Image (cartoon, rainbow, N blue to C red; front, side, top):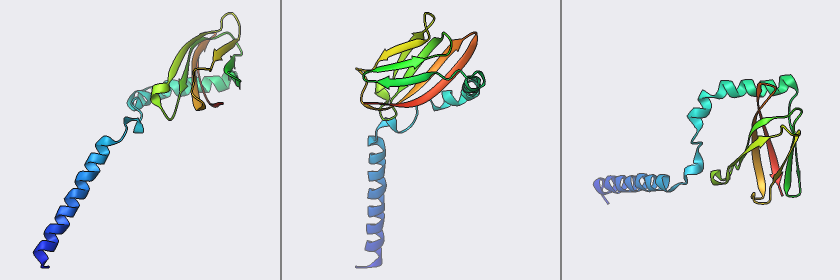
Length: 140
């Protein structure tokens, strides 16, 4: 084998490698990154202030999972949203409006939710103050 055939063979193998990596890249699932990355970056300061307000006012809600129910207990009546984020599958994410003006406890049925790790993001207002709280839970 002479030098010319070896160089051409190496170039062909390299081009096949690059082509296969391009095909693999376009076949990869889209869940590999956060689609809301830039929007979250723009709202980071607002969210940070809300999370700090929870610590300042000692307003952390108590979240318990018992059977197929998720109970959220607030210190004061609250109105806002609870977002259930599934880290492994964005399609399972769910958002629920909450209003605990009648009482401080909210019971959410978890029967339709997939078993495993979930992140709860609670964004609420109470006594004219905005709060944001995040916690990971396991549904069994």
